[in-house]
Image 1 (cartoon, rainbow, N blue to C red):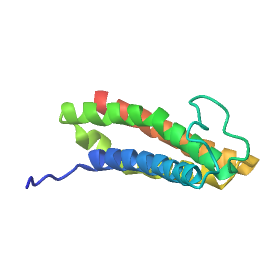
Image 2: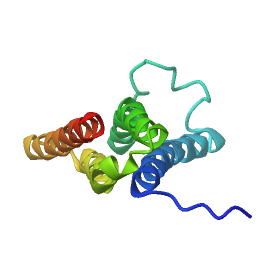
Image 3: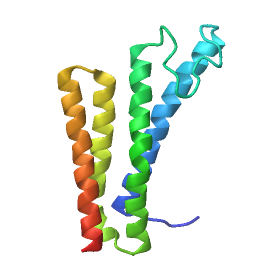
Length: 142
């Protein structure tokens, strides 16, 4: 067995990927349940189409939260992998878990609602991620 210790940056990247998978797994489980109980056809969720009529609001929010993760995971992955390739993980390690925490908090806020307050809080967590990405890039090139 390999004795591998992940740096905080790579552990946070793995956590980010795991969170993204958890969100899609939750959607898949719900949709599979609906298909097997005869409440939806298997092709009721065509890619890029509006959610089926009567889809629970939580499922729509879950899909949106997952898409937010999919949009930002490559950015975080690029930064983390460049840091690893340059052997400069020490430049990103102090910030990595804050990225993961802000991502999870943004997703949970997305699931909780879409009121003005929810959107503001969600945008704040997103802004924090962007600021952390920029901070890590600057730390890598400086």
